[in-house]
Length: 148
Image (cartoon, rainbow, N blue to C red; front, side, top):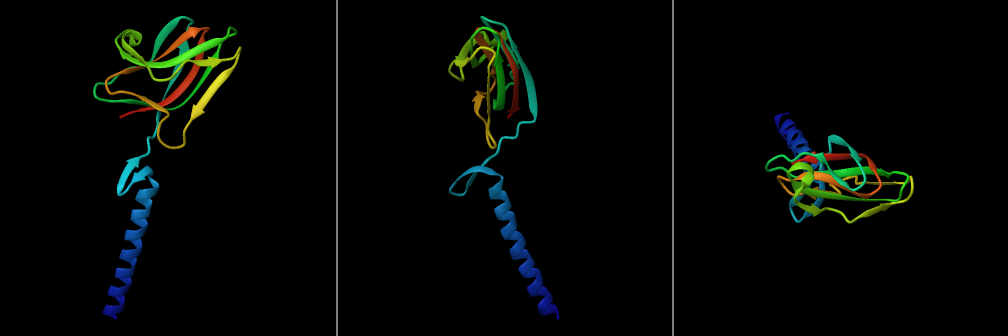
């Protein structure tokens, strides 16, 4: 009786150990051998509202943390619009601004959306704010993001 109980417990342990290892792999965006790259979970959102010819901060910097964008939707005003995601320090990323994306052209009264099921679309380096530049036309919309 005790031998049967020990065998049953051993089988349950093996089954549980295998399920646990598989569950861990499912939580990875990619694997490299035995290394797991965790999935970025975006739990924050921010509004985008930038007037033509300006750069406006969307997410403020946090020292030592990177801002990862998981999705965005931006719309253009009646005029043809060009928008760029940038990062930098200071007011509205004025200190050392750098492009995260190329200029995205939005047709008249159009919109651009992008999202990812796992990971992030792009990320600002640690200790940098996230901004949007509206080269022509006004840009409105939202982003979902995470800070790590």
